[in-house]
Image (cartoon, rainbow, N blue to C red):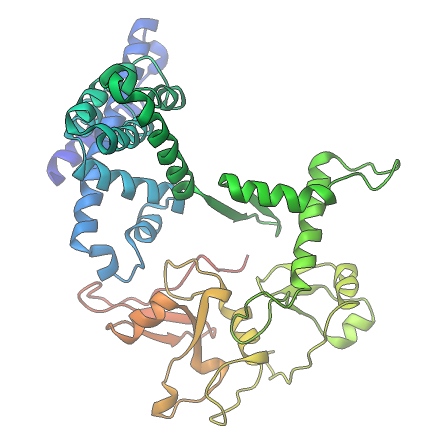
Length: 416
């Protein structure tokens, strides 16, 4: 298979710089159709390979917490895109073979394949295998005329065509299935931009959407006749108000032994003189005015610093890494330090590089931040960790994974 894919890669590469401008219109359209069909066929191959790797447990064997996370790192995908591939690969492997064949033939797209798979699963549950096979055939035929969104709408009444005697009963089952899909597909993505802002994208299920509207709507009204904010700006400010209200409660869970909080690092002298910007625990900076405003309603925590600005170690007088020492660890690692992991600090444990039970100290230069999965993985695998010359964690893979054992770092939390 590798040789055939290499040949296909060469053939496609030869087309990249081809003189598309020289083609007559009919040939140009034919070339577009051929490229699109090839894309779907390659997608079928990709899903087959993903399913095999998942079944063998290769991603977890290489230290990833799941196949989805491994694909994100390997193929540079987003988590939602990688998860959709893993789910569809499993569904095509265990479900109706006609869907996979249609994708391999280039007759349907990946998104249409997902719709047909979901619909066939619902029909299988309510009307049996024979009706599901008929539904797949009908939907594959319709796929040549309708996009995925329209195809999904048509799929809600597919039993009118393949099993009309139970269509009404199945309609309720379809609604239930749609509710399950809404639960499965719910997600919220926070995409960090270069200037410290976040882009929020996601899909909320109906209940969560109602909760958000109920909480945010009262805060989005104009503050008065002179309020010049746009509706989008009012919603933004309402979300900020909602977060402030939430942080003032005592019901949020702790993480790392500390209450939920915003941590900003600055110097006391420069704070009082309004000269210095502050640094969030994510590494992003705030203006001096913003730091002073936030300090009006904040606790100022003093810390003894070394010459390099690091909190001094506490030796072996205590085992747990908490308080200022953990905050220093968060400021350095910014999240799980294992290569390829994007888990934030609140999901992480502080791991002693040289175990405390073996005489290791509780100090910044003997600690690394790890999520639960990679904390367990480091304890039960041949991976090792040490601090590099610049004081940041480096992980050495086992020889079976990398014979040269080149140290690896996490790039998801790198400061810009």
